[in-house]
Image (spheres, helix red, strand yellow):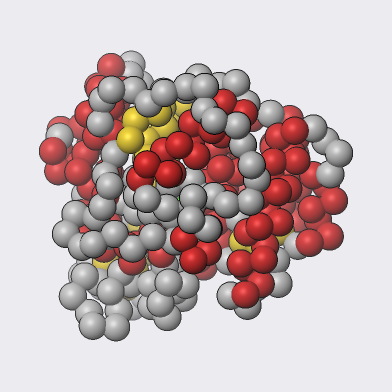
Length: 306
Ligand code: BDR
Ligand code: CA
């Protein structure tokens, strides 16, 4: 059993990742969910997290965190995800409330009190995680792994060089990538391939209210994806959870990866050192490929069994 904390900004694909984790409670023990301003403003994405949990009757503690990046102004993903950060499905108002602790304190307490190490699963900008590692450096010893969605060593989406989550708070990403904690990076190299096609949405039809919710998420998200030139909808965030559940579906390689914070056109770039011989230690396992069909089937199987 792996203890996890999901740090997220739901977010259509964040929602699907959360549902995948909930569907696998025999393998993943979700200690809590923390939120960060990203796809939408903090209050909106936090409400979305609570709505998702209310839909599935899971009273998992939710703690809200950083409203904005460490240094820069917030840049939201509402152009893609809609004003709420998760437009499309209409969900009832949440029946749960956030805990009184801030996300950073919450993560610290949960990790400290856990009898075994904890895996962090960041699915949004890395602000909360950077604050945790800087405020409580000793906690690193109790972090098993950071399995994150972010970056791309060959491609960007927010800009030609940078993926959204890293672009929004590059200084936070730099802290996390240089923290010494083991990192698995589900970046665009793999998540752009984790695409669900329109005809595959059939797998979600008439399978109950949760699958229907996912279908509605993907119908909205799919429209945006097509405007950005994709044939289907990229299941970005589900890759970070999916790797913990089905690592056999993924292929990757160790690289030294660092974050560009100064560049005028490369802000937020995840630069991998691809030289055969390098003075830099390899610090990140970068996912590069996956079995798309099996992964899509698996995601659908998970969300239909919640
Ligand atoms: C990432 O940015 C957001 O749009 C998604 O939720 C995902 O975490 C993809 O670049
Ligand atoms: Ca996200």
